[in-house]
Length: 413
Image (cartoon, rainbow, N blue to C red; front, side, top):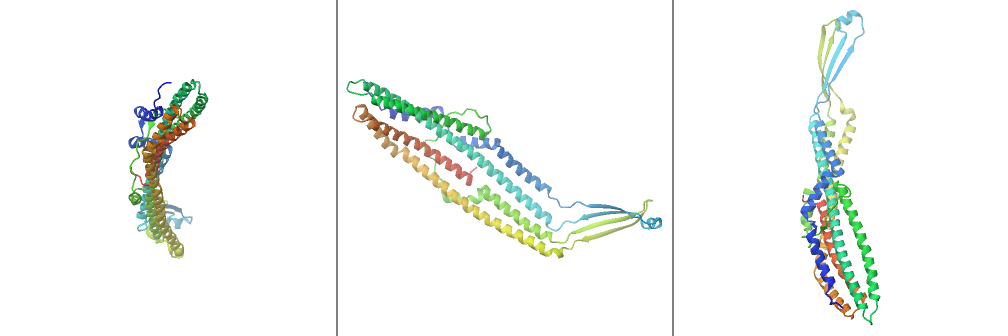
């Protein structure tokens, strides 16, 4: 029988090296380009931009002067009265602005426009995060396929060794048949992994606005986990960078402007008017200039109630900001914990856990090839080493996904 080299060890070490030579690294630079592409092409980004543009138009729609009014009336009387007093009446009336009303309305429109910009920014962040998570999942699928292919290659080698061992008159072909069965099962798993990879790639194409079947290169995750953020520092950044909190703060400012608007509405409405009497024969008989004023005193209780309601809405908006800040802080703690846990597990699975499993597998391989161990021990040891390697890559992917969740709460870009 041929001399045996620990094939599993070589394959598991060679697969990542081969993948590294031929694949695209999913790092921050690559993910940033995907986020930007998704933000340019996704329809949700366009709708958010249109709402922000509409809010900008609302600012320009705020006016200082209300529309003037003109009037024309005709007198029906005897000819002498019509001639003496004029039979046509022309009137012009211009309402005067209430003090502070224009500034309050302009401030409200400006606050709403800033809130819509923050909402648009939140939409872009969400769209970019979904695209980045798909890319991370695609890279994990590629690494899983590479490991699964190495697993199949190892099984093929073990099956060949088992067939050679069965040629011994004292041996049986049970191990060879068992390995053939394992090989068929692993091939089915590999086929399923490739179908899953195709589905993830299509999902990423949809998010980026590309044709559904656009090809993607083989991708790989970083070898080691990235540094873990500090929770207290991230929570301190929430009021400055979280788009939802910033939007709610702008809406609270709009609520304050609404209080000012309600307060100005209970002021009397003044208007200046000009009226002239003209005889249809062509002469002007008289002209008058007047000032009109509304009497809001009869509806004072209604105006006061409107002011009180606006004040309560402003206070509620301020409380909502704090409530949202606490909810986001809780989400930050969860995301940072997920990052830390995934990082610690990725390091452990790449270090001591992997080394111990590797040593155990090498020992079982040598024992099996010399007929001192049974095939079940070999397969169990192999599965354990494969699972550890795969779990390590999954933990790296989980950390990157948790960082995307954290970036939605406290954006860094």
